[in-house]
Amino acid sequence: MARSNVEKSPALRRKLGDLPARPGVYLYRDREGNLLYVGKAKVLRNRVKSYFQSRHLDAKTRRLVGRIWDLELIVCQTELEALVLENNLIKEHDPPFNIMLRDDKSYPYVKLTWKEAFPKVFVTRKVTKDGSLYFGPFFPASTAYRTAELVYRFFQIRDCDIPIDGKRGRACMKYQLHRCTAPCIAAVTEEAYREQAKEARLFLEGKREELKSRLETAMWLAAEKHAFEQAAAYRDELAQLDAWFSRQKAAVVDQEDTDIFGSALLDGRACVHRLVLREGRIIARNKYLVDDVERLDGAFTAQVLQRVYAAEAVPARILVEVPPEDPELLRDWLGGMRGTKPAIHVPQRGEKVELLAMAQENATLALERKFEPARLNQAVLEGLQAFLGLSHVPVRMECFDISHGQGREVVASCVVFRDGLPDKAGYRRFKMTHEQNDDFANMKEAVGRRYRRLRDEGKEFPNLVLIDGGLGQLHAAQEALAELGLDQLQLASLAKKEELVFRPEASEPIRIPKSSPVLQLLQRIRDEAHRFAITYHRGLRAKRTVQTELTKIPGIGPATARKLLQSFGSVAKLREADEAAVAGAAGPAAARQVAAWKAGG
Image (cartoon, rainbow, N blue to C red; front, side):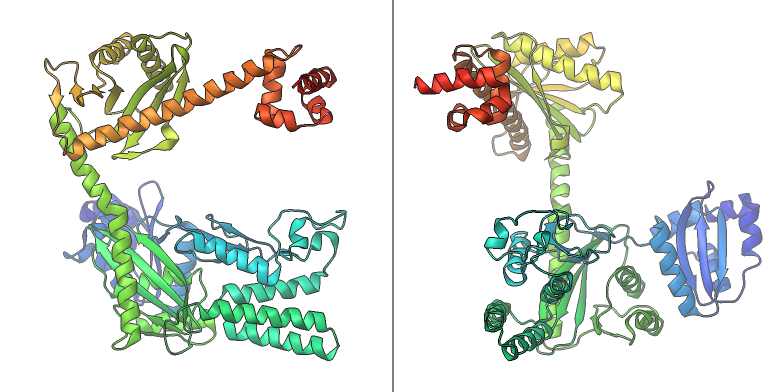
């Protein structure tokens, strides 16, 4: 493939014949001019030619070479200059064949809006390049909220979005609870608040000794000025911090800032687990997922470190499991950002080996949790295909259920499962156009409405449509699909009583063993559809019940009852509301009627 592209692309052939023997950066592009890969080389001629001459390329590199149509070169003075440029280009363009570290965003961070005049602290799961400081992610997630609460308690940093413009008349309750110093009412100067924020930052960074030193200095200065209340507040804060930090388990004996990288590999996917140690304590952990990896070798280590420290502060020491490729070049680059070169080495003994093993174990667990369920689900889906005789593996399934109470508040649900897992963004619910105690007609309407819309909008159809019910409900769904010209959609129904599966073309029901994961998957989908439907039905029923009670009030009609319900949520809350609040929601006349109703008991 690579050779044929060289033959077909005159520009690529010409550039390969005139490569400089200099350090630099090379950029590979496809036929449409899209950037595929950015790399650096000590000698451009040797490095670039190796892609097209070697017979021992891994699978990912072979795919890259097969798509290369053009080549750009940027000559540099030194290999270090090339490394810096390579990282800048990767950050700017995110080429698909460079290693991409996908942060695990399933855990929250504590965010400090450092660039604001009056910074605030809050918990977020979204990390953006907005100049703020992010600390985390936190495991478990509740730790993030506890940490933020400690920041409010110790340092009285705000968490609100109130504009700090001096126009606010009074502070909120957090000022009274000593959780905020109320910059919104100018109860604290910008300089004093910035000092609070600096102390909060040190706390979040785990810099215990530096923070204690600042607080002790402030305490003695306050005491010298006879500001004894302020000095006592600093003393109490120091005691609280000592108690907090004493509960944090020390990870290593020495106090040097250290990052530890452990990795795991599963089916071409890698997970890198990074432990962040500051002042001898683990203050954060990060996980990065990398696709299309064949080996956890020195080249992989080097690229991971380049990607991580292109955006993160560089510590004094970096511990890895495999020495990186070109370690001295990497140290030069990292030292340029840090001021001094960090140490990079593989631990050989003691607690550091144990910490590396911890990082590796966490990386393995993360991969297994993320991808092993997908493997198992795939096996179950293939088993379902075999049991039901489906033409395709049912990657996407949709299940329908009907819920009503004696023909009132008739609703239908449609839940979506993808790869054996709920896809809640795809869930839909329907209020039937006619209230009737006829499950067959209601099922036909729900299925018809769902797939008419998918057909008209050109959306994706499921591999299997599952109906909650027996043959009657199945035939009703079949009729709806036939009228839409969608006979090709595969149908099945699951009857509750005996857990039998019916198929339109099968003369006998299919009995799947009760212990089978295939039946358990079908039951899980059916039960989720039932839960979703009955939740919707109960909500409508409760709304009708409240509206009916409100319309019993003389002078209150259905429209006014709806307004009152929307404003107060329940009859009990309406009873507690004063006449002015009711008038604001539904008008003075309605307020008088409600007042008379309340007075009459």
